[in-house]
Amino acid sequence: MTTQSNPLPESFDSPGVAPAVLSATRPFYWSVRRELCEYRSIYIAPLAVAAVTVFGFLIATIGRALSVDDLARRRAILEEPTHFAMAVIMLTTLIVGIFYSLDALHGERRDRSILFWKSLPVSDLTTVLSKASIPLVVLPLITVALTVATQWIMLLLSSLALMGSGMSVATLWTPPSLVRMSLMLLYHMVTVHVLWHAPIYCWLLLVSGWARRAPFLWAALPPAAICVLEKIAFNTQHFYSLLEYRLAGGPEAVTMPGMSPLNPMTHLTPGHFLGSPGLWIGLAFAAAFLAAAVRLRRYRGPL
Amino acid sequence: MTVIEARGLRKAFGTTVALDGLDLRVEEGRILGLIGPNGAGKTTALNAILGLTPYQGELKVLGRDPWSERDQLMRDVSFIADVAVLPRWIRVSELLDYVAGVHPRFDRAKAQAFLAKTTIQAASKVRELSKGMVAQLHLALVMSIDARLLVLDEPTLGLDILYRKQFYDSLLNDYFDRSRTILVTTHQVEEVQHVLTDLMFINRGRIVFRCSMEEFESRYLEVTVNPAQAAAARALRPMHERQVLGRSVLLFDQADRRQLASLGDVRTPSIADLFVAVLGDKPSQPTGTAGQGAAQ
Image 1 (cartoon, rainbow over the protein chains, first blue to last red):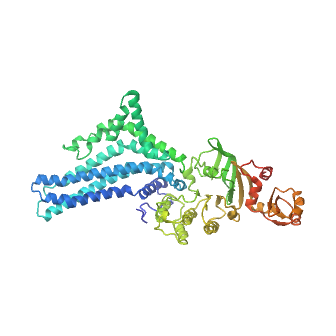
Image 2 (image 1 turned 90 degrees about the horizontal axis):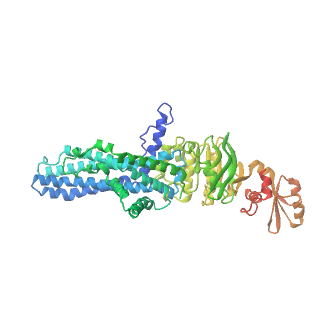
Image 3 (image 1 turned 30 degrees about the vertical axis):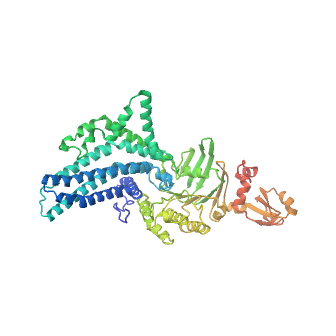
């Protein structure tokens, strides 16, 4: 990850190049890089999963597609793995994001390196924001970029295979449909995985900064306990439904590309999504959890 | 110029009082040793100075409030809080990249020059380095930061004698100058004796003794006397007396050297001897009258 190249200009100390902006963004940029350096699984895990799906596509799907004569069926066989690749990459980054968030503010206290990080001129706000940006910015970007790359590689491979066997590539699914699927994916990631799930990741970050041990249990057990208590005390399941709705993706859950047989573009309802109170309440919770995490990092030392 | 100014610093953990109205003043260009028994409040005092812990009372470090302005303060302050706090997963080259990225006063070339004198490889991960090498690496980083205050809390704990000596030698030769200030705590007092310019003893959350090393060397004398001269020596009102191999060792504050020389062998005491004299033989007991006197 770390090469000698330095994408930011070395003019940090020279006046006149908006030093205020640089001094604010530079520690943030390096903090994010540091996270990628420490948690290499952030990009290695989805890369490995993408490589495996391409490999599987190459050895299994193409052969099967070539042996089929019916054009529509061949197209379906070739198209199916592109949905599969998207789903497994998304699942991988989801799992990586959860485990990353649970460890982000816990690991540095566990190995005492927080004493080193705090000896540098990086504020707790910058640190916490850089850690929050991993599940909320970096992982969604990786998901979209990697999925799009995987799908184009699959398209390219099947075109080559069909041409090699003297078949027409005209019946393949087309780049316009791929582009549409990519846009759908981007929309789905931004609405569901970033905006709707933000309070979940921020909650995990807060717990990782608070818990002395077992952050996973501290993150999962209190909500479970509330569900059980509510059931016992009032015989209702409001909190459970709330959690389920949040985890499932809320109003835009149906925008998962490939899930709907209809033209998915007609399902996008950004107006409805932006108008739903659940989104804004969730974001308010996310902000509160982050603010608490920043404050906690100031107080907490090594474990 | 005052680098650290603390007045009435207080900090309690539950019912345990770690800092009990600590007053501290450190001027620029000094190397101050903060010596105290375990649990005296050394680390808590340093943590307050470094903005790692909240406190009550007044504290200014380089004119800033460390608790609310830690990130700003860290441009001018470096610290080694403990041995082995460098992240174990990081490569040496990545560590240099990162510090160069976030610290405006870090001189990467300088750090590389320091590291070239060691056996540390740029491609090594910290977890592959020995404890002594990690300390060398951390010192190389810290010495390459153009800071005004360097705080070291037990920086050589657990290192062998060669590394310890090297650590303080390079600190003096390659880093310290009159515009910098160093604050160090350690239990290995004898090793820092020749390094320090100032000395402070801390006990039960208070500074119980302070003096410069010049003062230390001119004021305090230790005389070893045979039992026959012991009574005569005691008449001169020593601060402290201990028995070594059947002879008495007496420590005096501002005594006449010639008078003492007539009684036995006179020498400058070690910091450890003075420490015992000031704090009493039992560190858990309240400070004795000798300590009170010396603190004036």
